[in-house]
Amino acid sequence: MPNPYREIFRAPGTIGFSAAGFIARMPFSMVTIGIVTMLSQARGEYWLAGGVAATFALANAVVAPQISRLVDRHGQSRVLVPATLGTLLALAGLMLATRFEAPAWVLFAFAGLAGVAPSMMAMVRARWTEIYRDTPHLRTAFAFESVVDEVIFMIGPVVAIGLSVVWFPEAGPLAATILLAVGMALFLAQRGTEPPVHPQGADSGRSAIRLVPVQIIALLMVALGMVFGTAEVTAVAFAEAQGNKAAASLALASYAAGSFLTGLVFGALRLRLALATQLLLAIGLAAATTLPLLIVSSLWMLGIVLFIAGASISPTIIVAMALVERHAPPSKLTEGITWVMTGMGIGMALGSALSGWLIDLHGARSGFFVSVAGGFSALAIVALGFCLLAEPRPAGRRHVAAA
View (cartoon, rainbow, N blue to C red):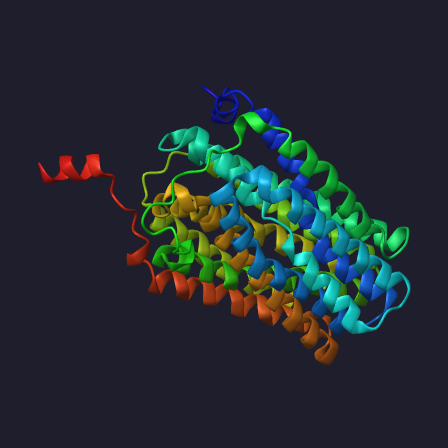
């Protein structure tokens, strides 16, 4: 039986850019949770930790689509170098401000400046799309990258939290900064697979977010991101309340592990269901699995519940990316994918801030109410926009249907 994952790597250069993208994406699983851990260790206030982390996520949600829009117009190499340098300097400033006990506004300022970080998830998927556009291999490639994302989110939080707890508070963000510098250098060295700049056409001035399906998927990701952002902050607070703060990294790793396993299976399937239907089913599962979070009473139970909840993540992201590829023109694909990831970033920012506030007021477990609200909001968004997410039929198939 042929291995669909092996097949996608037969194209020249695919191993190189995917491996480099793995390293360059690792920091994005580490920065937000690294900021939370760093500031909760150094300052002892979860509202500040969650607020600064949310500032980074929100700033990145606003700026990253503009970076990707420039990439669609000018190419990856010309845009990613200055954007990455700006991110590295801002993260260095944030760590120094924490170390030397700068005022809170300085922390928020550097977190906002670090938001110029480009969306590496979009950059990698844009390369796959250029190679396998309009072929079955593209879905497999998206599935593979979603699985890679989950591996990153299994490893990254463990490294970030572990370094900051065991070594010194700034150690997690410092490791993320180094990985970003190394990974981006390796990624940009893979020039053979860099997507060409596509002609913008008559609507060159219009943003990809003006496409209604992209709006729906981005809004969905805002709601779903609230679930993820809440899990990060609340898991740390819950583990600390249980007397083992470092164990939060294992609970979050189990979350990613659940998504990893379902992503492997889902990517190898050839489902006949419409993409919009697949998305609705995945979001229904995501909403249902937030309810057990309200009754967790131990770290073991939290890890098990998060593992089950993670089963909906990869299928949701895989299908969402496939829908964006179907609805966005090639000249706006990177921006379209980034808007989807941006929606998740906004949701994570909201989830981090709201859950941090609830935790300070009512205790660690209260943060999970934000997860439930986010999960069922996501389900409502997909249900209401279901008809608008229907896949556009290619011209050739329209002619066949008409005949």
